Length: 385
Ligand SMILES: Cc1cc2nc3c(=O)[nH]c(=O)nc-3n(C[C@H](O)[C@H](O)[C@H](O)COP(=O)(O)OP(=O)(O)OC[C@H]3O[C@@H](n4cnc5c(N)ncnc54)[C@H](O)[C@@H]3O)c2cc1C
Image (cartoon, rainbow, N blue to C red; front, side, top):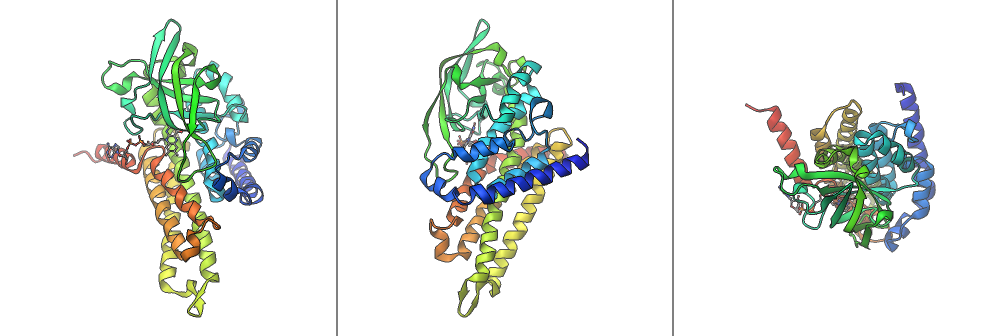
């Protein structure tokens, strides 16, 4: 697509998502959230809008859009209700991994179904023994002729109950050193024999499912090894997680923007001691800081997305954007709540939801501590003396 077409497609999809949010999502978000019930109708509408295939190439049935547009879409959705980004978040990580590393047969088999939303995907990486220390995973894939037999549990899996296909990471070699070289990526479909445990009860990010996946003698064909090569899983997932970090940073910008916009409106309406609180310098300072931090986070997120669009690895920039935006979101949602005083603490307003949603961005797709490790490792390479 040439740049003009990209710009037009971007404008169109962002506008469509914005209209969807104000028409279909905002009126029902708090209810779904409080009941912790799955918003199937909203997710189906997202599939109709093509959001399950935003970055999947057009020849495989997707929209073929770039990562800047992808970030903008996640931002708009999160301004409305962050939870609804869940079903397309790790789904798009799976799609990215197949598109980048899959064999042609795997692309033809999976990408059109993922693009239409007929099949919903996810990432099965984290385990009860740990999420940050990926190389220590215990799920094992034992070779058995042309198949593998998989045993182990994956924890905190978004779309675990509702999803059909997962980018599953398991060890095909337990003895190799370093350990991460023993990890292989699989495209695992639920109907073939693994199950989801019960939904996990979360602080925020409610309404969408996060579950355990249980693999007990799950038999999978060698045709489902991503890219057909063993031992590549760690590299594949680290690459794919960079796109995940853009989507998490964009979610953080969206949630923080929603909180800020509510706060600046309320500050002009709420009067104390005879004047609107927006006329108090302390409140003005707070609003100015919020807006400045959001602006910085948005620029960092778009910059990381742009680097992705120009090709190559960009783990430092994605890590910086994710680190800054998620921590910023935690600060801004609390500051916005302060502007609302007691009302901000009540379930009647979405402020408390924004505040509860913020920590997911700090933890998911690599915690802030892990982002700092990634950033520092890159910096030390760049500034080696
Ligand atoms: C709602 C939700 C949805 C999720 N969805 C998915 C999903 O779809 N797929 C998936 O695979 N995972 C998913 N996760 C898992 C998430 O990615 C992990 O929770 C995260 O990576 C942290 O792993 P952990 O929980 O095992 O914490 P740990 O790795 O045990 O870390 C505990 C603490 O120690 C810190 N720490 C760990 N190692 C170091 C170190 N070397 N240096 C300094 N500090 C360190 C961490 O930052 C953290 O503060 C989800 C999590 C949540 C909460």
